[in-house]
Image (tube, rainbow, N blue to C red):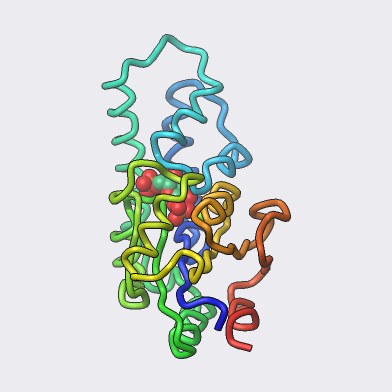
Length: 213
Ligand code: B16
Ligand code: MG
């Protein structure tokens, strides 16, 4: 086997929380008079909450926002987002994803999460996915978010594997850059990485073709 472990991004790969992020950011953006579209939301994939807000504020034209007020806005956004997460159930993870994860484990791969989200544990719990992974590295454990490699290196460290033995699965440009910076190969789901990924797939189950031949 070329790889020993697979590190999965969470949002956009295993679950689709982008729409909840969008609705929560949109509510805040409307209040601040900022034009915020779904296309703008795509730029926030894999990026931390704080950096996402800075990107949204690029279009802000009001008075300067003091740091403590920014913190309040970030908490407010997260509260709205977590309300949506509270509605998630195990049905928010497709059979395809569950069967593929099981197939990879049965084939001998160790599985981890490498997510920028500070809500990772809550999402995994809501979707009854926690037990599908050997280790979790997330936004609560890092100081630099993707495209920095920190979260993937942490996942490899938790697994006790060399980075070169790990393969990352990502939906975001920032995630493909982070994987390569960590010395890991990367699988892009959809258009992530614009041709820079080592493998490209359009459906999750294609991982079995790549890894279990
Ligand atoms: P939170 P991933 C990322 O998760 C999301 O793609 C990104 O849109 C979000 O801003 C970031 O998590 C932080 O999320 O506000 O929950 O801490 O794609 O790295 O799994
Ligand atoms: Mg993602």
